[in-house]
Amino acid sequence: MTPEQIVRTFFEEVRSGRNLDYADTLMAEQVLAHQVISEEEVTVSRTPSNYADHVREMLQAYGEFSLEIQELIAHGDKVYVRWRQAGTHIGEVDGYTPTNLPVIEIASAVYRVQNERIAEYWIQIDRLGIEKQMERNKS
Image 1 (cartoon, rainbow, N blue to C red):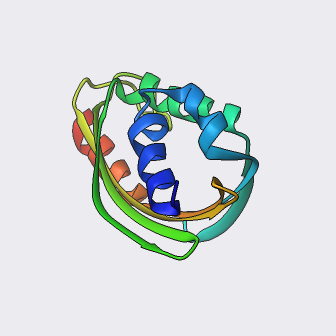
Image 2: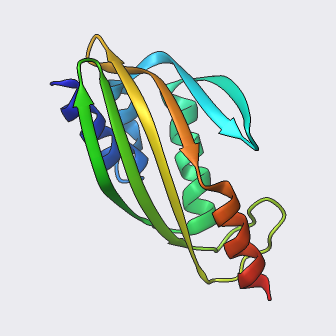
Image 3: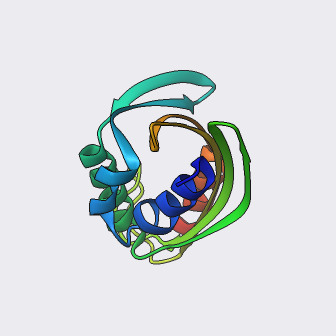
């Protein structure tokens, strides 16, 4: 598969929560995940197994969510993806108790593919937007 096909399949199967076991096929044994949290860059190492656990946590927090790829651009071994995830706040999130109201996440990431597996990614999530939705929903 091409890097674009690998990342698209990753979103359709793993990131969506449909087939978490497929993470073993699409991700390297150790994936460097570069994240921006409150304007601070953090890098964590993820395995396919703990990435699947991460998606399970999202499912517990937001139920079966929809995931729409809004843009996907591939160049060499890197693939840029911007997506919209919409779910329902059914589990505790950052101290916010469930409201059963919609929550939308807008995010983007660049994935680097090596040996037909995702080896590294750089992600940015509109965390302030999510927090504002949680504040509005609890009112």
